[in-house]
Each structure stands twice: as structure tokens, then as C-alpha cells.
Image 1 (cartoon, rainbow, N blue to C red):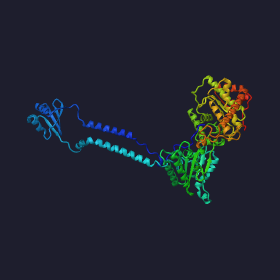
Image 2 (image 1 turned 180 degrees about the vertical axis):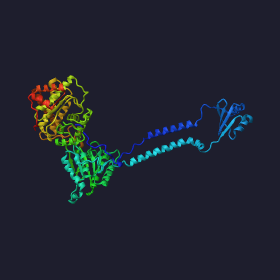
Image 3 (image 1 turned 120 degrees about the vertical axis):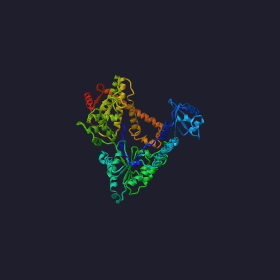
Image 4 (image 1 turned 90 degrees about the vertical axis):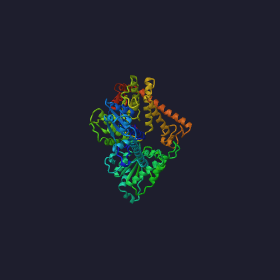
Length: 639
């Protein structure tokens, strides 16, 4: 079953903890600065540079042209002379320093009469534009430097702010007056025992005097344990909503950073904020990310994580009896937590949240169905019966997939058929309609699934069949849906043995009907072999070994350094005997499955042929087929 996330997203963060806006990188700034310099330089060159097609002559040539009468006018701008000829041509030259233009021309032999025929204009620039022209070559560079310094200052100021806030807590805060995100126990279906345990915390936060007067101390830490998607985060938010207190939510991984000491600083800041806002609840999700056992010798040490854990332990010890701050944490791996976290005075109250039973699943479905328009044929009781083992997150995904299927087919109401299909989509994945089997593969798959279904219907302790299909879903070419009629908390040895035989049904049928086996039963063999080994090594269900367990919790073994070699807890001789016992269980299950298929071969062929024709057989049609061949369907599980 794919894991689902039941945590809230998209919540609005407080201004204190909002992420600072992204700033330009150094290379981006440098690129903009270079572009600005290029624009300024080009503009200056365009406005300052003169015409490029003007001829340049000497002052002697200009005097000769004035004497010959070909010059119409002369414009003087400082030392620059521009002569306009009568034929429209323009020529330039340089005037003599410390001498007027007329004196220079007379000196080169121009008579006053010849000079009188030429219009001479002398420009003497002054004021603002004169000085602007003088300093314009430097203004562009000065402005560029000022702009560059300003950009660098802004960047450094932003980095300084981020450096100062690096050790601050990243917790998301939900205040009591935030009605949009407020959650109460009414919004949490199922988990009756967990809500009863947490009701005491709500009562303490509302009325602490009642407890303090009688000398009672409310636990400082509550650890919520359970599989993924069972609503641990939702329950923690519901406690804050019921009590009307501030809710500080943070993930365990947010404490651990690259630099040692940052996580501890964030822990101190988080507890300081909570005490200032008290009454309040601090919720640490996935606390196993920071609270794992220290000093196991496996995987090396992590100073930052251990310092963060130490700071959490110190902060929880530093509570005063009158401080109304409760620390809640959630994990689905309580076996890997450090014992110091679980001792009395810290997380000394542990609340287990199990997968919902049938009645709880129906209540959860009703909550998720509030905003969805349903057709008249929708029966949530049937959906609850067909979803054993589903978590609250799985049920949410189921209802959402049903609405998506209805919208995809342009219908404005969700029908029962949509919800039935969404069960299979959540469990196995979407239909792979493009995965078309050849005629031979389709026949092999049909017999394979018929073998699973037939053996499950004949064996007394196997789950009844609800559906058979040879339409590919996920990685499976076909599937047989077995669902119990009742929720079970315990599994017996007889049920395990029948389950192994059912898992081997496809393998047995392929070998018997086609004289060969395919890769199809590979997952069946892995599951059944692992189950047989667990019967021998964990559950004491072996006739040879009896009441002995050779393996414990896998996570615990890896955490404490055991299980690193293949047989760390028993000798090679015992290991060989375990392998032999597993082989015996598998052989007996194979023989049992082979006997059933041989005895009821006619029913097997009838189921397989019908599957080839229609590709999917629902429970009612399937039961008609097996009844016609003398097999009675199951109405109640035999235990």
C-alpha cells in the first residue's frame, strides 16, 4: 500500500518566520554592471564624437583658401576651427595658441579685404553645459562605481540578516484565533482511545489549577506512535484547537544543519517562543530524524544531531511545574528513539494510533465526503468493508481519486463505481491500458489469477475473493483481490499456511497447465518465502523449533549494530536448519495448492476462460462460477 501524507500544507506562515526574498547573485550583479557601463560608454561616444567624414587641413591651407575666396565662413570653438566652403564642403583645423584667428590669418598673408569676405564666428562656452562637457568623461565611471557599491551594500546587508536569523526556529505557528486552520476532535474520526488520552491534556491547558491543587503533574511530553498516515499530526493540531492555544509545528529534520550548534540554537529559540506565548503546544513531527539512539557505532556519529537532541532533553527538563507548555512528538519508528527521550519526565506518555477498523473507516470516509456531491447509489459502508488496512491518508486519497475519476468523465456527481475503482488505484496503481498483452500472455495471466482465486476459495482459512482482473495495474499484469469479511488483529498459523498456498497458486497453475513458468510469480514467491521464514524465526510457528524466536525487530537490530552479518543471532548449523524448515513449509504449501488445482481443474478452466473473455470478474459472477462447480463461497471467516 503506498504511503500517504496526512500533514497540512500551504499554511500561512507568520511574518517572523517567512522566508526572506531571493536576492541577486554576484554574477547577475556583475552582468548588470557591465551592461550599464557598456550603455553609458556607447551613449557618451555617440554624443561626444564629431562627424567622421570631415577633412582635416593645416592652418596654412585654410589661409590660402581664404585668400582665394573659396571659404564662406569659419566657426571657432576654443582651439577647434571649422571652415564652411562655398561648395558646401566642411574642413577642420586647429587654431594657434595665444593668438586670435584674425591675427593668425593675417600672419599667413591674408589681406583685410579678403578677410572681410569671410564670416567668422567665435563661440565661448560657459555655465552648466560647459562644465558638464568638461566632466562628462568622468561622470559615467563615477555613477557606475556608486551603483556597484550600492548593490554590494544591499547584498551584504541581506546576507547579514540571514546570518543573524540562521539560528532562529523555523517553526510554523498557528494562533488560537486562526479559524481557517483550526482543527478539533470533531474533525478527527476514529482513534477513540487516543482522543480520550489527549483529552486530559486539553483539560490541563484549559484548567491547570484543578490538577495543581491536588498535586498532579501533567506529562511534559506526549509521543504519538503509529503507522504513516494514521493522523498523528491531525490529532496534535486537534489538541491545540480544542484547548485554544498556540500551536508550534516543526519537523525533526529542520533542526539538523551542516553547521554544528545551529540545531541546538533553534531548539532554544523554539522553546523560548513557546514559553512567551504560553499556554502553547510544541509539536515535533518525525522526531526520529533527530532523536535516534546515540553511540550505537553504526553509521558514524553526528555531532550536530546529538547536540540538538541534548538541547531538547535539557529544555524539557527545564520546565517549571506551572509552565503551560506541552511538547508533542510523532514517529512511526519508536523502536529507534533514544532511551533518554522516553524516560519519565520527558516523553513519558505514549499514545498509540492504530490503523482504523471498519467502523472508524466509515466515519473517516464521511468526513472526507462532506464537500463532494454523491450519486444516490453511493454506500460508504461497502467502501469501508473493502478497505481493510487503509490508513486515514489512504481513505482521503481514495475519496479524492473517486472525485477525479468522475470529473475526468464530465460528471457532476461521484458514483459508487468511481469509489470502487479508486480503491484499486490506491492499492495497486492506475490502469495501464497501453500495456497490451499478447494472446498467449493474456491466457497465461488468466490461468495464473484463476489459480490464486480458486485456491483461496477452497482453503478454509484464506480470505474470500472479491475481484479478479487481468488488466494491468502498476507493475502487475493482473491481480486477485482478497479481502477479509472481518477486521483481524491476530493471524493464526493456519491462516499463514493457507496464505502461502494461495500465493503459490499462480506458480503451480503455470507449471501444470503450460509445462513452464514465467516471471509473473516472482513477487508471489518472494512474499510467500518471507512469510514462511517469519513463521520460523519470529512467530514460533515451526514444528521443528517450537517456541523460539531467532530474529526480532529489523529496525532495532540494525540500530543497535546487530543483524549486520547474515546470521548474527544464531549459529551456522541453526541457520541451515531454519533454511530446511522454510523449504519444508514451502514444499507442503506447493503440494496443497497442486492438489486443489488438480481436483478442481474444471472450475479453474471455467474461471480462466471467462477472464480471457471479459478481463474482469466481480465477486457475484465469480461465486456463480464456483458454485456451479461444487465450491461453496465463504460468508464468514473461519478462525
